[in-house]
Length: 319
Ligand SMILES: [Mn+2]
Image (cartoon, rainbow, N blue to C red; front, side, top):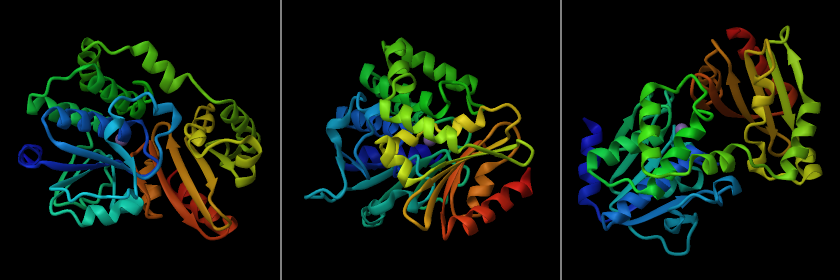
């Protein structure tokens, strides 16, 4: 079993680097910080290299002492480098270079579209979150799960399951969450910080986003557009776009929700969600993106008129 091989590699290593994907979400950050904390307890020298600063919503996560935003002034040579929650090398952004230069590379993920880009790949698509895989790994390693590690893993799992509501939530998800709760975490405090706390700028951005909402294909497709002008007008940060796509997805009758985020005049970041039957990861894959059946993303180049019509044609195709 590949997970056992990965564990023995980690046991034999001293300097370990851990990388989440770009625009790291709750699963990526929670998994990285939990693994970092656990390996430090085992006496390892651990660094977590991030592409960007930790978003405010996850600033309460323990384990950030090991984290640095890349590029960092002095970068050590690592015995092993581990990418978490990362579907392909492109999702490592600028850090793809340090990943490639490490003697041993590990990829632990749960995306069905994972490209097996490392020397050792453990991709478990049945896991709702990478947090579940890290939990299983730490159990196999016999690491004692304290409150800090458990908080990170709970956030990872809660984030990727939308608070245990999405179709990826299984009985295993709940059993793991139960164990983490037994380790003394504060569920109400975590839930409030992750799901029920927002900046005023985000609320203002939501207003603009709702105003941009269009329903297409007899109400089966909801499209929300966030322009650079809307970002400036609201004063919102990039991370404030998280979850906006759900405004469209939650409308009765909608199957596919699209969030279009403008990144310059000819680049658009696309978030896709579906409710019951459309595999949005397949749509994203046609544009070199990826993700899960019910949540995926990709980047489109070109004028919006041209890129948008190609995207909508693909969605129409699978409706
Ligand atoms: Mn994930």
